[in-house]
Structure formats: C-alpha cells, structure tokens
Length: 191
Image 1 (cartoon, one colour):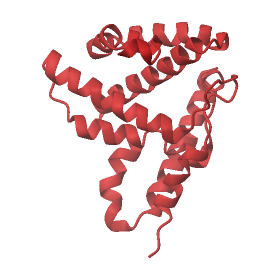
Image 2 (cartoon, helix red, strand yellow):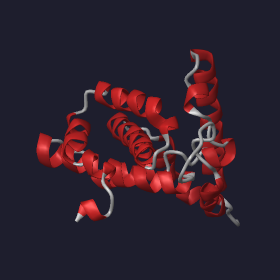
Image 3 (tube, helix red, strand yellow):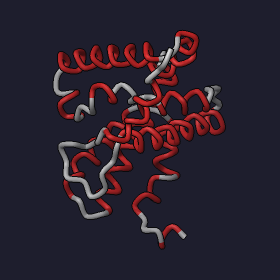
Image 4 (tube, rainbow, N blue to C red):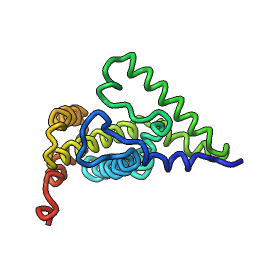
C-alpha cells in the first residue's frame, strides 16, 4: 500500500496563519507547529523539574508537532471566527475530527496505532500543555509583531496574555516570568 500521509504533512508549510491581520513576518503552520513543540516540551520540562510533575516531555513535544495537522485539509480558521459562538466552535471541532481521521486513514494499518494518540491528543494533561504552548506561541508572535512596529497586534497581544494567565498553569507563569521579556529584545540586546 502506498501512503500519502507524509506528503500531506509536508504541505503544512503552505497553510498561512493570521490571515485576517497584516503581518510583518508571515507564519505558516509548519513553522508554528515546530515552535509549539519546542514550547510544549519546555512547559513539560518546567512542570517536571520545577513543580514536581511526571509528564512525558517527549510525548508532549510530539503531540505538539501534530497539533494542527488537520489544518492541511481544513485550512487555518482565524481565532475570532472559530470562537465566535459555541455552534461554530462545535462544528469546527467536528470538521477537525473528520480531518484527523482522514489523515490517520492515510497511514498503513500497522502504523495507525502509533499515530492515533498524537493526531487526536487523547491524554488530557498533554492536551492542556499543548494548548498552553499554542497560546504562548501566539503571544510570542504578537510580541514580535509589536516589536516590529505593527500595532495591529496590540489587542491580540493583550487578549492572548490574559488568556495565558487565566490557564492557571504554574509552568506557563514561570515561562512568562523567566523567558518572555527576551522576545522583546533585539539581537544585539540578547548578548
């Protein structure tokens, strides 16, 4: 059986994010997924090392790599539309689930069991960390756009920061306190 799964996954780079906003630096789903994986791994490590957690940081990072894989088939739905009302949100969740199943069905049968958990984020703690990392990635994007003088991201930055703080995750608060200010610095200032 020939499989198109990885050819589809490689197309993540063609799905653009932040479609409703003017961007100084365009971002695609593949770039975003890599950043979310790095951040989710960091949050898991912080949880384990600083707050006595026992999550599998590697599993969290892998789930983050695939967290937006369904967008290969659905495209990226802008946040203001996706979360505008519960009916749209529920319908979009259904669409995402169908896309995830389609991707899973592209794999040879013997590989599906290994990919099912990462495509569907079954473990609730993994999903929670990936969601926080996803929001953190969005906040970093907002901060970087503001640093470039793009005031279009001012309100998104404030809303995203508030949402992050509302998660009540000590590892996210630790990341914001310890690492976030660096994203506002220039390369020379990082030395």
